[in-house]
Length: 139
Image 1 (tube, rainbow, N blue to C red):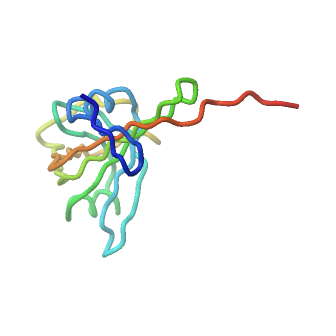
Image 2 (tube, rainbow, N blue to C red; image 1 turned 90 degrees about the vertical axis):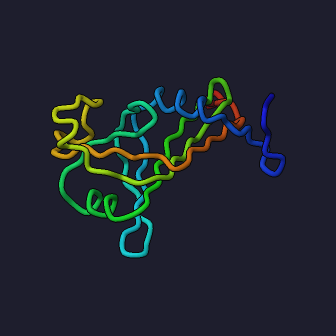
């Protein structure tokens, strides 16, 4: 049975389908609380079990992520099929560098990273919706 958001027309995606969708993309966005203001960082990530794992270097993103709750979002738009989806994970970030030394994640975004971070989800939700198909270019 499909679960449709009657207000916006989006189909609500099951938890299992959310994890399956996340396996199909390699980039997402990490949202952190930066001194009372949201800040968003593009990251490449992997799904390991039912967690999100990414690598980073020392800096604002890492420190803010480890201080409080985080959100993670990934999405994809397929104009050919007219389907788009978005998955959002809320949870806590944990430095797992010592637990997973040398873990091989997807190719690093902007070079090698020193720290491995895992997001332990407290919730995951997703939506699938129809988008206009790509129109051919006209002269």
